[in-house]
Length: 87
Image (cartoon, rainbow, N blue to C red):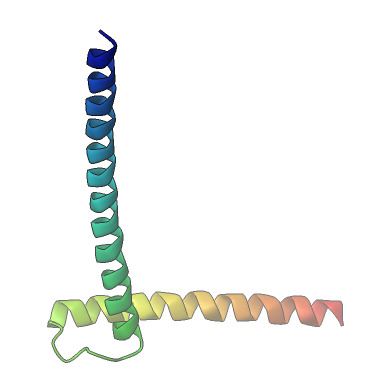
């Protein structure tokens, strides 16, 4: 009976280990794909590797850059106003 329990425990542990490994591999693949997407987007934002983009993708990139620039200018103006008010 003890041998049966040991075999069951070993089998259960192996099943759990295989499932855990599979989950980790899936997570790794998702994270790798996300990282590649972020790196590609960063290159596009820096003006690199944009010759293969479609018109729609270029327009989307331009809109993203415009909105980012507006946020940056807004933050800069806010800091300037705060600095002036302190003086």
